[in-house]
Image 1: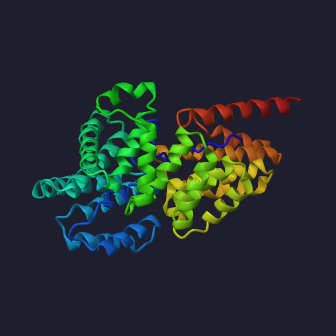
Image 2 (image 1 turned 30 degrees about the horizontal axis):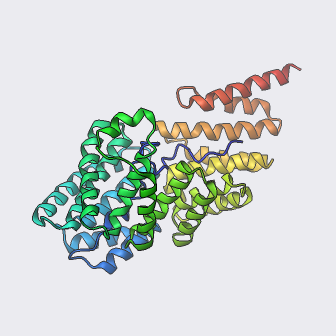
Image 3 (image 1 turned 180 degrees about the horizontal axis):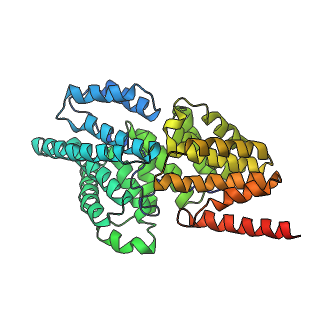
Length: 390
């Protein structure tokens, strides 16, 4: 079995190698500047709870907004929360629509705040991060020109802050991230990058991320996230990536995404038993099934791990359990996720000698839904046919 960090769950922090994510986990990135007219302690507590998926965090965000409705900070956190709930929770457009409404409102508030506080670096920071947050959505949906219209001014605004105040540590994260990935931009995105008028320097970007991790207010956690991706995607160092993610899981044990990422890195570094134990433990997380896309991915990975260990009954049970939950979910992304689970189911049934049931499982996988899974299923069906003809 080939273990890959990629999946149908949108998971990469890379803005260019994996363009569906321009900024990953920006929940805290937005609030890293020195705070103006808001309770710093409340902000920090809200962010930490949001990172750890604490059910109290939405109410705390509301408190921040109520404290000063014209300040962009609380709105930014809520905008980001809605975005990531959509990414990890649902296969319909309801949360996406809520995000778009909130993003439009937040951009207006950010512009007004920057206009009312001309020359204030914090106000510029907020506006720059709003612009990049909206750009992320456009990139996620393949709207490259629209994303450019937000990335270019946002990145320029943030670089200017760093030029004016080199010890503005929180801004080092988005600027450092841009340096790392722009310096390693694949050829098919070179034309897009040239339009940004930003030259990437990998070593400088890594330095900025490390400085932010050490001296940032809240973005030190975000820097750990991005340093994980830099280690994995750019430096090809799975062990270093695992160490970064281990630290994040220790800080935020209830963050299902961090737990999932650590499990994958454990597999990539040969710690398969640890990964299985982690995935099994995640099934017991409160509201685990609320995060549908993550839930489907974990069921699939656990089923694959059971197959590789020869635990066919467990693999079959985990696949059937998740497929049952997905019966009434008809979105395109969910149907694609089902194909991976059907492969697990077919593989387990085949090893158990239930060839007719295995063929039925493989036959449900359609090329339109997932070409790679379809080819795997078709090859399996050919092998079963050859086996039956012996």
